[in-house]
Amino acid sequence: MIDFYLSATRNTQGAKRFLGKALKSMKPWAHPDAINTDKAPAYRSAIAELKAEGKCPPDIVHRQVKYLNNIIEADHGKLKRLMNPVRGFKSMKTAYATIKGFELMQMFKKGQLDIWKLGQGLTGEIWLIERQFGIYRT
Image 1 (tube, rainbow, N blue to C red):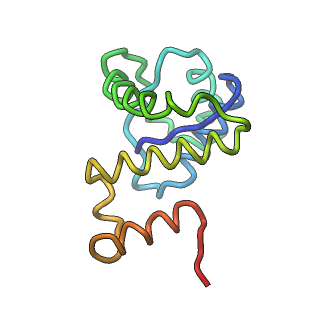
Image 2: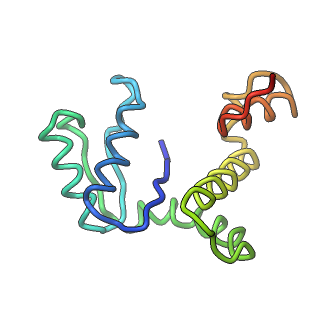
Image 3: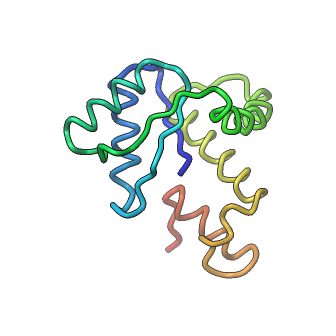
């Protein structure tokens, strides 16, 4: 599972909230064996707190190895090139929605969403986008 959390600061509270929500959204049998992060100290303490609270399985390994995270960071480079012309955001809400949209389009290009589409071709993609952004037709 790859996800993102947009925050003005990188602290333990934000990391804990992000990881807690990500783990809570998964079925118990689908929990990862390992969590790869960059070397920000907030992740280490957030994972330790989640394990102590029982919200994170104790056998999950936390890996802060640079080359394992490079694959994810290289993918973010494409996202940063797309966002460069945007030249900043007025609020966190618009930043989140824009980044989410760019990420979704990148996933379409890579074919990562083919199993989630209900319907063939463009109809399935439209349904998925509507569901992702909470857009419902009446």
